[in-house]
Length: 210
Image 1 (cartoon, rainbow, N blue to C red):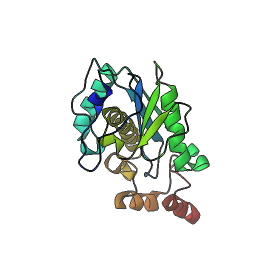
Image 2 (cartoon, helix red, strand yellow):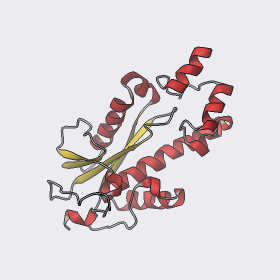
Image 3 (cartoon, rainbow, N blue to C red):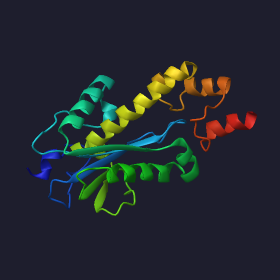
Image 4 (cartoon, rainbow, N blue to C red):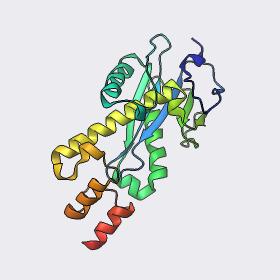
């Protein structure tokens, strides 16, 4: 099946021109650059032309229930998928930009069968040896990137729900670690946890008060 099958029409962008015509194209995306706590999570997905999945789009445009339903379909029907992460400690050691690319490379390397070409959400490739192209707003323009965004979002949200069960006073299940007013208030009241990113300014400020 032609690779154009996976293109998503986007009113603000011209149709993608992809310099690859095989079936082992991996969409790659990440979730968790902005939160103050936890890992940055990346996913890579090679869709199977023989098993199309309806409704793939930017994970942020979907309800949690719809994301979870699509997550199950992607895992059942994709030719290959992988989810990987870079820890909060790696974020602090490398910075969020490099940690994000590390998580992406880990996801790409975990694909079986391996990818031959990459489509990566954003404006930079993650430094992998495979050829590919970066696609601005890619999760709304190509189904494989959308699928990766969904897997990464569901995985990271699950981590925040698990953290919420251990530390309900922080509200992680609601704000998913992002620097909302609720999170900042809890951070000031209870202090940083081991999983908080010490290199992020709101956490640094609280650590300085200890």
